[in-house]
Image 1: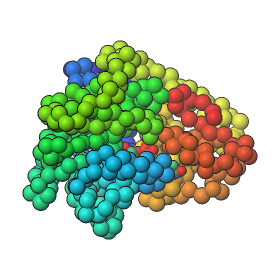
Image 2 (image 1 turned 90 degrees about the vertical axis):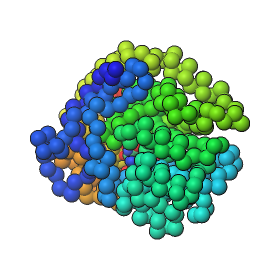
Image 3 (image 1 turned 120 degrees about the horizontal axis):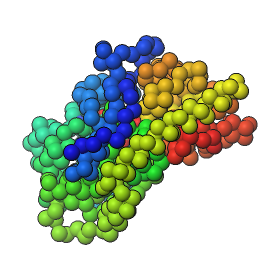
Length: 396
Ligand code: DWN
Ligand code: SAH
């Protein structure tokens, strides 16, 4: 049974940055109710309202993984790990985006899967074999008929975006060699609760995984966890290492039971923990609005940094407009001169001078705060301050 614990109101599609501002309507299906539930049986956290993938992931998907050094560094380190630990002959990435990870592998070793044609074009152009398609059984069979099998499959921040998880894992199992390895990496729900980062919920994030839910989910497909790595990326992620249950050659590390125990101790198998989170989110909204209003009363200037999907959730849930945040800055070419989803707040192409005469910077990309603080030393030296809502609304 799926029980509701969070209601983030009506929200626009997170990665649709319009060229000019327009008020969106519920009737025209430009706004969707964003409610989140917990399945008491499977322990999986999911959205109630699921939007067809073809609407969200089309030929104009703006997000590019390579826009942050934190992510390109993390992917480079992972590529070394994968080569040393598993030495794959064939490596398949689901949701390869602009190739931030696969660029560290040889061209003849990699298969990319990416449904957004603007992104698939990039890895194709770089010479990587790319299927411009959605991950499903049809595609898995198509790849099987050409390559027979794959020894390492990897997917970061993508499987949680696909509605039919049964088909996802069936299609993976269909293609993986007997000794094959699956590695998936996604924001950890435990970290999400601890940081009160309710902005991890937007229409693309249909699911937020925990070790508890992943363990149950993959069991049905003859797969099991054998290692879990904790990462700082995206506000705290888990990297799950998965093998076939009947593959006894690989030892199961104690990182798996350790993570499961930590989650159980925190109460992630208990609905009351989720309800508590839902209530704290309401307080977070009020506190953020209070903070922004106090600053604006003093006629001080606030801008946003990182026009993220996460910020879209915060702006629309808290109803923040351009009377509070003047504009956002972002390095992504396809977000330039567009508007934050559902809001009359413009996104300007990042330039250092856009931080001149700014008193406060709201961190839309709080997950990259370390990288941003390093870049904005001058702003900080001049007395500029940052605002974040994680783990609670505050000035840094
Ligand atoms: O799961 C998803 C994650 C991986 O990426 C997708 N569904 C959508 C997207 O979510 P997001 O937009 O919340 O992701 P990020 O990675 O937090 O976005 C960071 C944004 O900030 C990018 O637009 C790039 C920008 N940025 C910047 O302008 N200057 C980032 C850094 C580090 C910077 O210095
Ligand atoms: N893996 C990258 C990109 C994450 S953004 C990273 O971690 O930085 C989410 C990605 O999932 C997008 O590139 C999107 O196109 C892809 N995606 C969404 N639905 C998908 C599907 N059904 N099959 C494969 N990829 C999908």
